[in-house]
Length: 381
Figure 1 (cartoon, helix red, strand yellow):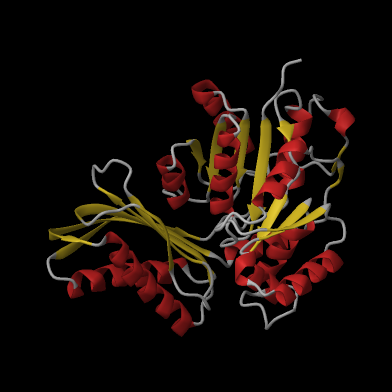
Figure 2 (tube, rainbow, N blue to C red):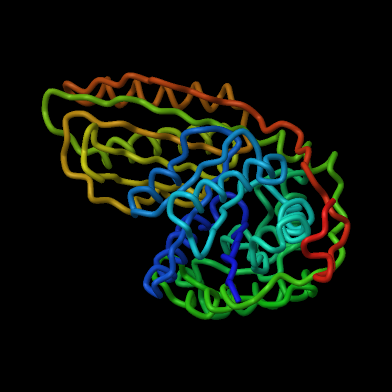
């Protein structure tokens, strides 16, 4: 009997740690001798995530211009492209962090239409524990508006497994309280995992479950698409790239920290909440050199992640910002931060090459199935 490749989708709100977890899963599977293909997704183009995946040496397809639900046919094409190029045993898909209703609009249609092509795993949804504690009322108040919170909570409602990430940052008492609150709020989930994608703790059990389980059937959750669209439209999106040069060698990671902290301080001062800020700095013409930076909440500092970037004289800075803020404002503070770094660093020049800023359009899924039973696999819509 010919085995079909696994399709694994890992969801979660912006800043929950999906990208780190996806790479950890890809490495875990590769160590088992399995071939992996990754599919990244965003409303815009020019993702830090895609650069990072390529740097790690994995085959990747980037789907831009909308969520998987709205770009379903493109998602299938991306899997076909990867199949032709590298014949993966496992496809790992990372959806947009503001997207929900993935079961009824992505995985149920995949199983119904392409049931002979993919073995679809249960949907795992990651959470940043500090943001989750705010959202379920354990600590403080949520920093987003109620319509954005609606999306966040709906992501958890449809999850087959909720994965508390960053457990290394929690006390045992915090972890117990959050776990109990999530079970009480979302009793239909099958599993609850606690992990640290950064350190690797707890990942093996979660990965084993995902790669050996099949998504169950059932009824899709109820979702108010008007409210969902209004929540997404409150989020500002900014993707930018800038060429940074100097006559003397400079530290690309230091440039990223400066720019990110300038943007961060402006967000706090204006009262806008960041959902996720990502940056990547790569050497121009360099062979796989990269530094990556993240900011996931206003109450955290910027954090430098992966880096093997040596001092350089010419490099490319990629910036992705998602925040509950006007996109035009995000562009202004980003360009201002870049200009300020050039003004305060001798011989440094910054050339902004591309800026894309917008609010997400109303989601219009290609398919949406109200329910699914495994016996329907292979049937046509």
